[in-house]
Amino acid sequence: MVTYCKRCLMPDTRPRIVFNGEGVCNACLTADEKHNIDWDERRREFLDYVDRYRSRDGSYDCIVPWSGGKDSSYIAHRLKFEFGLNPLLVTFSPLVPNEVGAYNREEFVKLGFDNLLLRPNQKVARRLANRFFVERGNPKVAWDAGINAVPVQAAVNYRIPLIFYAEHGESEYGGRVLNEESRKIRDFTEVLEHQIGDHPGNWVDEEITERDLAPYQYPDQERLDEVGVKAMYFAYFFRWSMLENYRYMQKAMPGFRTDPNGRTDGTFTDFDSLDDKIDPIYYYMQYVKFGFGRATRDSCRMINNGQMTREQGLQNALAYDGEFPKTFFQDNLDYLGLGENQFTEIVDKHRNPEIWEMRGNQWCLRYPPG
Ligand SMILES: [Zn+2]
Image (cartoon, rainbow, N blue to C red; front, top):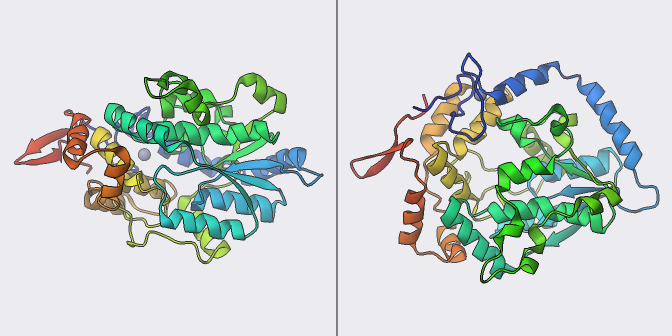
C-alpha cells in the first residue's frame, strides 16, 4: 500500500519522509512552520555573518556552488549586487552538458562574475555513471559527490571560508533533519549518507584508481578547520521558492533561457534543472523506484509554497510523471554505453514490484495518486 500526503502529493515511498497522525508529511509541516519565522530577524542574522566574512582586500569572500540554473544564479546575483559580496562561482560540470545550460552560464558570467569550472575526467565519469545506473538505477551518484566536493575543495584551495548552498533538501522536501542547526549550516555527513550512500574512496576498481577519484573526495577535516570553512543554506535566511527564484532571474537576466520544448520531459515546468541532458533519466528512475516522478516533485514544491492547489498538482502528476525521457535519449544511451534493450532491462530491474504491476503489456502503478 502506498499512502500520499493529504496536503501535498508526496507518497510515503519517498526515502526518509515521515507522516503525522493526520496524514500530513514533514515537508508540509516545515512549510507551516515558515509562517512563524521572523524573516527580518533572519535577515539580520545573515547580515551579521556576511559582515564577519566580508573581504576588504579585493579577494573573494564567499563561494557559490553554481550550476547556472535559476536557484544558484539567484543567490549569486543577490550576494553580489544586493549585499556587496565578492563571490566566486564554482561549477562541477553537468554529466552531459546541453546548450541551454551552457548559454545561461555564459550570459550570467557576462553580468560580472568569476567562474571556476571543473570538467572531470570523462573516462572515469562515464564509467561511474554507467556503474551506478546499473547498480542503483541512478546515473548521478558520482556526480552528486562531485558537486558536493568540488566547491569545498575550492574553498580550501583558495582559502575562502564561506560557502552558500541553496536549500536544505531534507527539511524542505521531506526527510530526516539531524538537528535544528543542520537546516542552517551544512552537515556533510548527512549529504554523504543520504545523497551519495557510500564513500567515494570505495569506488576504486580494476579501471579506476584512487587518484581518478580526486574530484569526488571531500577534503580532510584538518584542512577544512585550517581555513575555517563554513557552508550555509541561503534558504535558511530568506524565503525560498523555485518559482520566485525563476521570476527574479527573468528580471535580472532577461535572456535567461528555458526548455526549448516549452516543457521538460516528465513535468509541466520549463525552467528547472535544465543544464544536464541526463536529468530526465534521473527523474524517470525516481518514478520507477519510488512511484513518484518529476511532476509530483515540482507540484509538491509549489503546493507547499501556496502556488498550486493539490487538485492541480494531482492533474500534473497523472499527466506527466510517467512520461518517457525521450529528449536526448540517444545521447544518454551513448554516454552510458548502453543499447536500448539493455536500458529497458536495467529500468525493469529497479522497478519496485510492491509499487508496480503489469496490466496487459503495460506497467501500471498499483496505488496511483488520488
Ligand atoms: Zn505533504
